[in-house]
Length: 120
Image 1 (tube, helix red, strand yellow):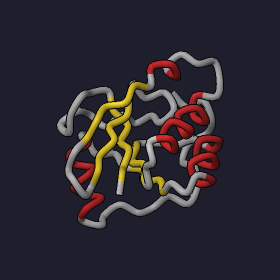
Image 2 (tube, helix red, strand yellow):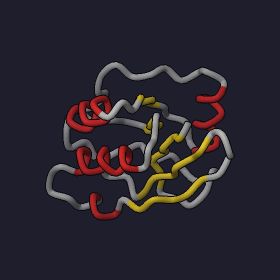
Image 3 (cartoon, rainbow, N blue to C red):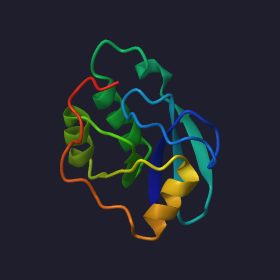
Image 4 (tube, rainbow, N blue to C red):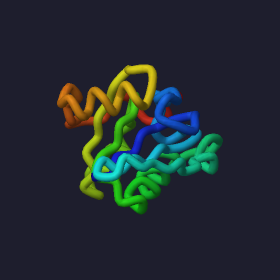
């Protein structure tokens, strides 16, 4: 399975960005191989609107089955769910910690957005 993490860094020890649509980038992690790559999301950092939906489209194009982030707004949540992507919210500090929580089964799949739109 491929998992996308929101991040402002370049590796597994990087901070987990609490924002989804306006995260600086994404770390795409393959659970089968342990390989990862960084995907830029800078086009959405200063978007007037639609950042969450555009970010959801990026995550879908990457072939992710799951997204792990701090928070996800309603429009992005609907777009991700329509793409069959499970969303997990967490407040852990790093991607490595979030991955550990996910692999241990301690993260629960979200059933609704946890913030209003345009959350910064």
